[in-house]
Length: 187
Image 1: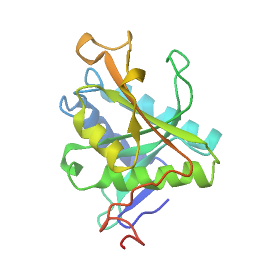
Image 2 (image 1 turned 60 degrees about the vertical axis):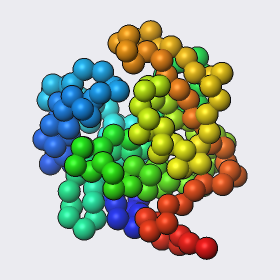
Image 3 (image 1 turned 90 degrees about the vertical axis):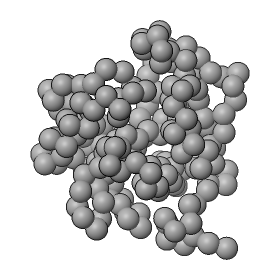
Image 4 (image 1 turned 135 degrees about the vertical axis):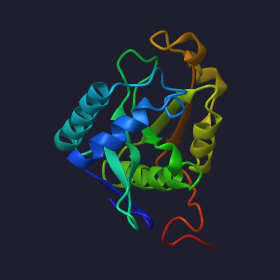
């Protein structure tokens, strides 16, 4: 997939080093749990690519078109069976230098459109730790909404991250297009 500024693509060998560095960064992992080793991060890449090959969706590597720089991932995944709800989840993770540029919103919108138009999904959810206000802001910018009654505690997560919030968007909802970020934006 392509947006105005980004490529969402299969994973490459050259992504392993920046992906590993990104997941070793405590600030990137702040709402995800402990930093990962390079081996752990590499194993996740294999899983991500396997999902893309097997299902036609998953977490795509995210690349800035103008520079070819790998900056993280975005995509869709099946909600874990242990969760108190089911569905398909929108997710993203970006390296710190990519934060604040609107990349998560831009890529997230492309993935939502793919999920609704190509995969014919009825609803897509997004989940984050209650304290992760930056991710929640992206969810709201995408037109996703939260019902606090659905918030839950995930017992598999460290105590300070245990409280999780869910945002949802349904097919046919007005997806928000961030002007200046996507083709066709404006009045």
